[in-house]
Image (cartoon, rainbow, N blue to C red; front, side, top):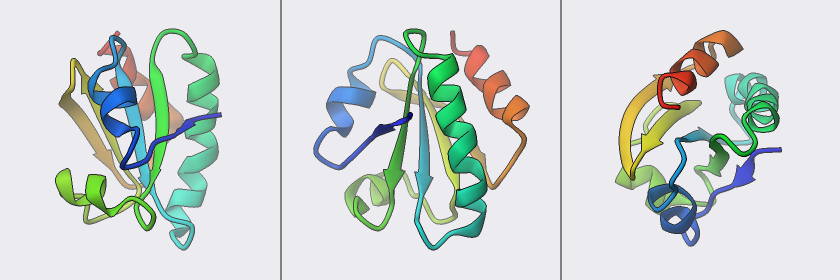
Length: 105
């Protein structure tokens, strides 16, 4: 299961992580987000110990969403050493997401 990332734990779990981080920005009302969500959970299991995989509910965490200019969801951001290194907007196959994550390992 992907970690729940919030405005309050974002810096600790994402920006200070010594591992690559994949964050899924989503909302309950978003159809494509419901398609991507289970895939992100699978990736979280597969990369446990190698990468941090989390989800940000944009409705509950407006601070992070505004900070990174999230206008369309699902939006998946890849972080390394506290910096955004890649991103993907929209529902895509799992292989696209894992390929981008592999590049950060």
